[in-house]
Every structure is written in C-alpha cells, then in structure tokens.
Image (cartoon, rainbow, N blue to C red):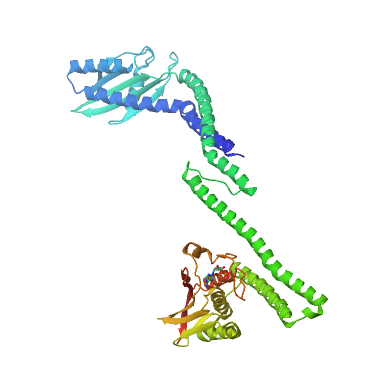
Length: 466
Ligand code: ADP
C-alpha cells in the first residue's frame, strides 16, 4: 500500500474518532449533559433567590421577579417560623409550571420541604401529564435569624428531541465536510512527503542501470536531506568502486599478459632454435615466472588482508633482526647492481606483532625504495626508539612523490607513473599491502616526500623489551 493510501486511511481513522466523540457528546449523552447543566443553573438560581431574601421586602420581590423573568422559571419563597409557612415572594413565568398549577398540592410542597434538609438542595425532575417538557424543581432551605427560608424554583426543561434532530442533521454535514477535508489533506500531505522519495527512486533506478551521474539531493525534510547525502555518498563510493574494478581488471590482465607473453615467446624460441637455449634466456623465463608468482601471491595477500580474513598471529620477535635479514636478502642485488642499503640501529628492539606481516611491510618498503631511488642507488633504513615505541623509516634519494598524489599511493593498483626502471618490477599492490597490514596492527604509518629529493616511508610499533 502506498504512502498516499495509508495516509488517507489514517486521516479517515482520525475523522472517525472525532465523529464518534462528537456523536457521543452531541447525540447519545445530550440528554444527560443538558440535564446536568440545567440542574446547575437552577441551583444557582435558587441560591441567588435566597441571597436576595436578605434584602428589604420590596427589593426582594422585585429581584425575584427579575430572576424569574431572566430564566423563564417559576419561583416561590416561603418563610417558616413557629411551624407556619407563609409565601413571601413568588413569580410565575411558565405556563407549564408545576409549582403554580392546580395539580400541585400542599403535599408536594410538604414533601419537597421534608426532602430538602436544612442547607441542602433537593433536585427533582417531574413530568406533568399536561406538559410535554419535563420540569426541573430545585428546593432549598436555609436557616437564618430564627426564621427559615424555603426556596422552590421550577424550570421547564426544553424538549431535547427537537435539538437532537437538528444536531443529527448537522452531524451528517460535519461528517461529510470532515471526510472531504481529510481526503484533500491526505492527498496534499502525502504528495509533499512522497515527492523527495519519488525523486530519489527515479535517481536510484538510474544508479541501478550503472549511471553514476545521479543526484539524491533533497532539501525538503531533514530526514530525506540526510538520506540524500548518504545515497550521494554511496553512489560516489560505488562509482569509485566501479572505476577501481575496471582498472583492476585491466591492470591484472596487463600484468599477467606481459610475463606470460615473455615466457611463451622465449620458450618457443628456445624450443625451435637450439642456439637460443642460453642461460640468459632461461633466466628471463625464470624471472618472468617469479614475477607472475609474486603478482599472484600479492593479489592473494591483499584480498586476505583487505577482506578481513587474515587474523593477526602475534609473537614476540626481534624487529632489528627481522630488518637485518630482509636487507641481507638483497645482498646479491647490492653486489650485482651496486645498491647500497644502510641500516642504522642503536639497539636490539623487540616487538609483539605478526612477524610474517611485518616482514612483508619491510620487504615491500625496501623493494619500493630500490625501485624508485636515485642514481646513487642509496637506500637508508633507520630504527629509532622513542619511549616505548620504535619507528622504522625507509628512505631513498629518488624522484619522490608529488604532494597531490601522496594520499593515493596507498590505494591498490595506484601508480604515480609507469617508471619501473629497475629489475624489481611493481605490481601496484605493495603499498596497499603495507597499509592493510599496519592498519590491522593499529600501527601509525606515513610518508614524507620531497619531489626530486626522495621519499621516507615510516611506521611505528610499540616495543616490548629492550
Ligand atoms: P608499485 O608496485 O607500483 O611500486 P606500490 O603500491 O608499492 O606499487 O606503490 C604505489 C606507487 O607509489 C608506485 O607506483 C609509485 O608511484 C609510488 N611509490 C611507492 N614508493 C615510492 C618511493 N619510494 N619513491 C617514489 N614513489 C614511490
């Protein structure tokens, strides 16, 4: 069910409640409410008459007449002293009054007198055969200055039936008007509420078709504005993901194709031309195979790390020794190609970390430094201890990285340029692996670089022993 229909339903429900409450008060309880109000008004009138009895006789009579006239009631006031009652004032404003009718006999007055105990009121609703409207009689007795004042007020009750049919007619009209208003309101409100949702739905359909040029902006309501921002962000991220995915596929296919072409090319040449079966050509095939395997293992490492599938296997080990061993792996490269890797450390430092991952971090950073260092082929690895933390930095003297590219170098498959000039060729995944491994350790890391002068990559780990 749509918002519009739902809202209409709620409005109709609301109207129904209003109509029921109105109906109860105006139609069902009308009699009771009318009687209640009439009783209160008549009791007030009796009180006013009693208060007027304190005036001088002339004013009292005039006041009684005025009060009776105002309220269209009949009033009788008796003063009783020495057991004898005498009517001291009265007004007869109602033809249908029971008080002054011939039907009313002394016994009714006596009964009213008996029932209205001193300082209390006695209320009674009476019907005279002659009169259709019922009569309301309020009798009240008050003692003052040795004499007793007995007030009887008779108010005719109007017939509720006439009012009831008017109200019923009104009620139908009000119900119809309310329903029409509810319908219009439901339509207007629902249309306003659903407008941003409908607009967003239109944009979402575009997004589903792979069109990332969408705008979920909506300023109408706070909630939809927030939703719009979130969806815009999601669309932006999806678009990035899509680009990364496309780049990833083209990068992977490119990276895999090159060594595979080399391997098959050289192998065919060596199969067909016996003179070409040289150690150098064999080495090329071996190198390319290694490159392929390192590419595949990098991809696997990264997918495990980034997918959160890799759990840390923490052990305590010597970080200093780990660095030394990694550098020694490059000794043949140093001898052969003249690289100079220096390692400066004042002390043996132990850390509690995942040794395999930290080894990978150091290896990737040194590989990059070798790959990108300047013609002096210098690579500096420094270990500095500050308090309870050790900082490892790997510096080179290469062309450095421009500042605007710095934030992206940690992204997978990001390369600032295709300038792998040395034997160790990159996969574009090295720094991404470094980042994921260090994030998993919650270890701070970073890079500072001066274009043309070199870069320094660093990370920190808490030390466990000195
Ligand atoms: P690659 O396999 O291309 O080296 P990385 O993820 O290791 O991939 O590095 C990403 C990019 O960051 C590199 O392509 C390079 O442009 C830049 N980079 C990494 N290390 C250095 C460095 N020491 N000096 C200059 N640029 C670097």
